[in-house]
Every structure is written in C-alpha cells, then in structure tokens.
Image 1 (cartoon, rainbow, N blue to C red):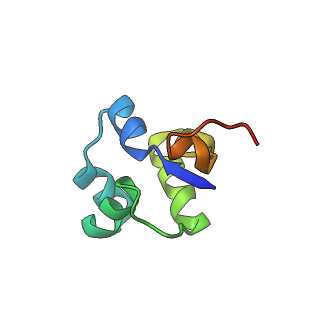
Image 2: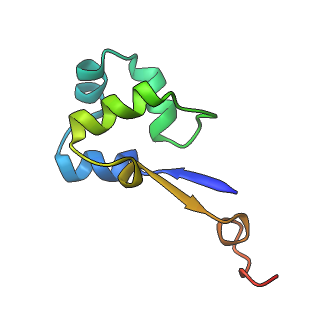
Length: 78
C-alpha cells in the first residue's frame, strides 16, 4: 500500500508557500518539507488537523491511497 501526500497540490490551490505554511503551523520548514515531498513515515493527527485548518481542506485532499501495483507501474489484476 502507498499513501501519497498531495500537500503541494493543496498549497498551490491555496497559493501558499512552504515557508508561509510552516510559519503558520509553527513547524520547522525541514519537517514540513519531508511531508510535502512524500519522505515522511507518519503524520500526527494534530499536524494533519492544523494543515487542514490552515488550508481549509479535508484530510482526503491531502492524503491519497494508491495500491502498490499502481504505484509501481503494474496493473491491478490479481
């Protein structure tokens, strides 16, 4: 299973920079960058809540489930 973080998409829609979002969230730029670039291993609900609050969106707008086979370029047949 693969969870894709679409934070960059929502940031673009809301016209907010990474540094501006980090400042509003009171989180380091480095930590937010890890999340934005799909390098994170986990996210706290409190962090997700704050992102959604600031960007005025739902968690589904930020997180997307994509089956492994689809991510790896294969078909989804079993």
